[in-house]
Length: 262
Image 1 (spheres, helix red, strand yellow):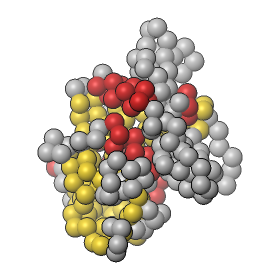
Image 2 (spheres, helix red, strand yellow):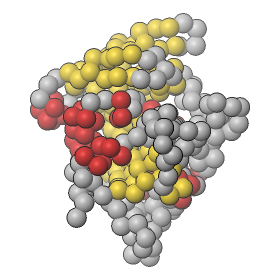
Image 3 (tube, one colour):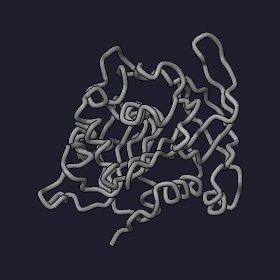
Image 4 (spheres, one colour):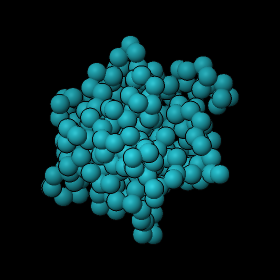
């Protein structure tokens, strides 16, 4: 199972074969490994393609994403789950087949919540939002029916000028606005957040509300939810579609320091 191995580990809490500090999935639509490479973060890759990588013409490989979760103590300090990771949606997007094996499994959700509560850090991008929504249903209000998988995936592609709403992030970026590229349609839209949820970026976006295209003003675009000692981050856009400086800075500021390669 995907996030039931988000925590594959030994009796000591560390996998004997996986000594990296960060786990990252390969999804069909996003790839955060270039950012981790630039930041020199030691990471393990989990192959989670639903169909194929839209960002690479070359074959990709890694540990099977189904092995990334378990109810054991976390082996990783952070887990990054990218858009298009299998098992986290209603159906396979290019054919009518179920794709909810992970997000519909209560053990996966319990393991994910427990991992963060015990101090772990989870970041999900775009289509992986169902994992965030099912695990922390009160933290964020997504567009559409919160009980229906994939229902928030109504965002329209295009360039969005986002307002930086966190002072520390604005200082680190050296600007109070960032340009975001929503390079695919049907991205997951957030409409509101719980008062205890942090909003890092906001912007005006176009989305389909079920009957018409509408403009959502000042919509949350990057949010985080802290629970006990851990943090869960929801990024509505793809990291690999942004400038290196923006993606790298967002990862290190929102998630916190990531351990470099020894």
